[in-house]
Length: 569
Image 1 (cartoon, rainbow, N blue to C red):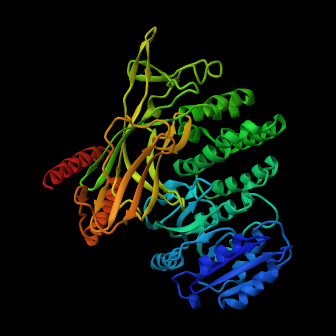
Image 2 (cartoon, rainbow, N blue to C red):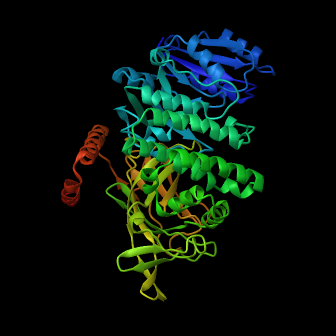
């Protein structure tokens, strides 16, 4: 028995059957995996339905348990019941891709992995994109961004869990999955990441009553978060590693929790309890090393929390949440079978005017629009401009599968006419981005499947983190000639679309053959593409290991070589 899929259930409704069907359809032979369903005292017809499933499928095992109120206890029962070499946790309302179990087990056995992460897709929550950018055969919590993925939907070596005594906290509580996963990450000798193919579909329930949607009790939630942070402290020494890990929680669960749009609907009592709990954890766990690594606006937020100024923090949150980041497509073209799109993003105020910055010499200072009376002293953002990330990715409309697109950005400070105040000149900071999409490689090193793929852009930095469709209400010049479709012989048609309401998208369709009056591109054979992708991944890994003094010359040599090769095509 290679793997046991453990599923806790409680009154799952109609969503469970689709999840079971996705497991029954696995390419892994049925006698090599089992489906262990632990029912946590369902009060509807679920117990009888599960027993009926077990009679129809020889690899379905059902365990009936008294109601405990949360997923921890049934998952622990599943670990003890499991017979597989690996245990894959799955929620009752989710699904798995047909080849997921086979590939995850293969990766785990090949690397003797203790934990294997498979690419997660969600139709209602953001999935940390940095975790699933590339396959990683072997890594640890210290050399890969796995700390950004703390949900339990992963595969664990069962002997590893038993030897380390790893169990989920039981009872009705929050963050039981984070506590379990963080402990497992620190204990694991080898963690592997399968990123080149969707494995796990983290789906919105049909009744929209996913476990994480229940109202949050600040005292209980942040009390549980304290336990997670204590695990990080217990397993690290003061220094860069600890600061990086604590920084993740500082940005997302602490400062980030008091910066989200949801807070606009909180009443004064809830806001006060949230603030008090966050401040308690900030004071106890966040030191200067963590604070110094924050961008300027997030640092101001953190300082306001530590200084116990909830009114100023709330006002800053209102101002930043009102900002927008529209994008405008400047041009698009096919280049040797690749789609290149140039676009501009810029932070705007609610009235549509750009957010202005003050330029004093070679320094850039955030103006008074955001800070005003909150922080009257200038906020220098020069270093933050180098850390801005404007990224692009594709999202398939039907499945929500996402793939990153290669991007290159430049920031072009533009002086505002009549915007000089004393020694300072007011400037706009439009960010120019070139996204390069290779349809033969973009989907995890494979060809982009047929479907309708929305182009998305994300701007992270300077106190904002906004994702939106590329273009949207801001499209290119409507009089410009539309980009012709690209036929990839012999049977694929790829078309760039752009509308004022939905932005840009890429449609991939199967056709019988390309018309003679259209653009035709015949890509190299699949073996050449695979070899090229492998060399590119190896090159990126080698580049990352170079000293900073050598990275600039190496990048220049690569660009020169690429230009020469393209000139010979």
